[in-house]
Length: 237
Ligand SMILES: *Cc1c(COP(=O)(O)O)cnc(C)c1O
Image (cartoon, rainbow, N blue to C red; front, side, top):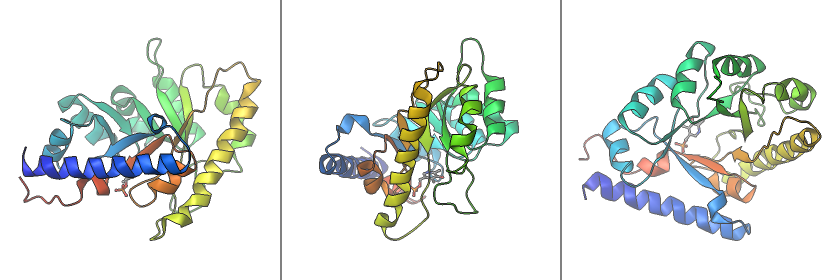
């Protein structure tokens, strides 16, 4: 195994072991939490090496996702902000778009859907209420829920996504994750009487600095970049 391979293997094992411990602490089945390996800062050669042992990847930019997904067969997720003129690219190459952050974008995704392809998406919510972050407002979603459900026929809305504010203390993110889960529960209830068949099973929350409280609060997808590629530099071969 190459030095890069050894480092990636060690990092992946360490993250997965922390994921299992967080599941154990919160009484969850570890099979209900999936790791999305975020490759936006990773060199292609590292991603190639990681792809030998792991196959669920996340990219921020549709262009890079499209390029890499053509080179490396894997499950690719789009996790970063999506512009409407790039929706087609994202829909073609991403198996899940985590970052649908407005009704206009949801409509654009719906316009790209086809008879035999119903794009899978999550709705991004700005729970931390930071001006720098995009996303639906927590207070806004219940009021526009009926309009969102109208898209469910052409788009497969699978859940919610959020990003907590950056902080050195992961515990500061916990209330944000708990709030996303409560919002999901509330919206699921509001959809239960609806004929849309919507199921908000997925909660995409938690990154390198805060994935443990996210798992304890119900995350089903965690998005990890820096922890996986720690110890690698461009000089490593
Ligand atoms: C970069 C990024 C991540 C991963 O962040 P790390 O702190 O490197 O784990 C997760 N989610 C989104 C939306 C990102 O842009």
